[in-house]
Image 1 (cartoon, helix red, strand yellow):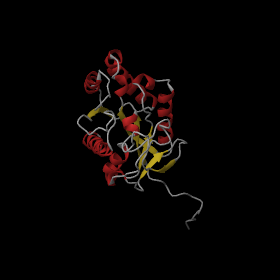
Image 2 (cartoon, rainbow, N blue to C red):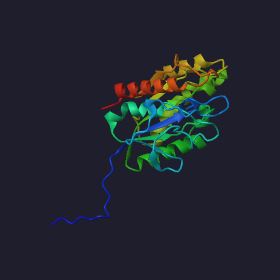
Image 3 (cartoon, rainbow, N blue to C red):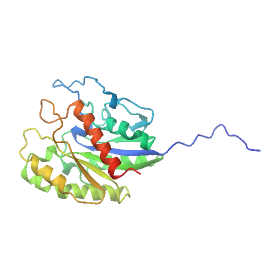
Image 4 (cartoon, rainbow, N blue to C red):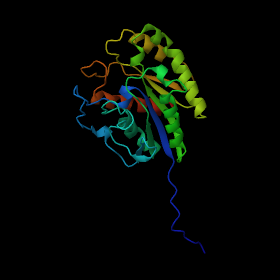
Length: 247
């Protein structure tokens, strides 16, 4: 006779985990006005769904909802980013999903070098997510605007990004971890945007894909994507993931 133990927990489905990292356009500034207020407008593509979770700042899973980075990028006002529209676009193929927000506005790539607080926090959060019955599927990376201000930083970008990719894969013990990076669409008044974009598109490593944000609508600051553009970017990222990495 089978004995039923009411204290046993039902097995939880494996979470398909995506790390969201970089700077402000990944953290999300869609709908944030010049007075640093988020308008709260949520397009249908960004609505919560029971199959989409986020790892909060305390390393606990909760229902994912915008702004995804509100307790991560805490020094700025966060609004809509690409994460929720990405997740909603791929959820039917993947089932239970876990988003791991890590992006911090205004950060240069050297601030993401191994051993820095930003890097160590990203790896810690990714390990915590995977350690709770999750499988890391990809790192979505949107960063580079801060490196477009000087020629030196722009010229060093390719090597720094390649080192970041190598380090993340090594430290997560995922040598083939898919990386989808976004070629920046803007850099405010910075002079070397095109050099950074060239560096991003020139990276030629296995399982690294670059999508282009150029042409998406910018806010009046000529730096951050609008809410509508963030939704579009989420779909671009989803198409890239499905085309290159989805089973």
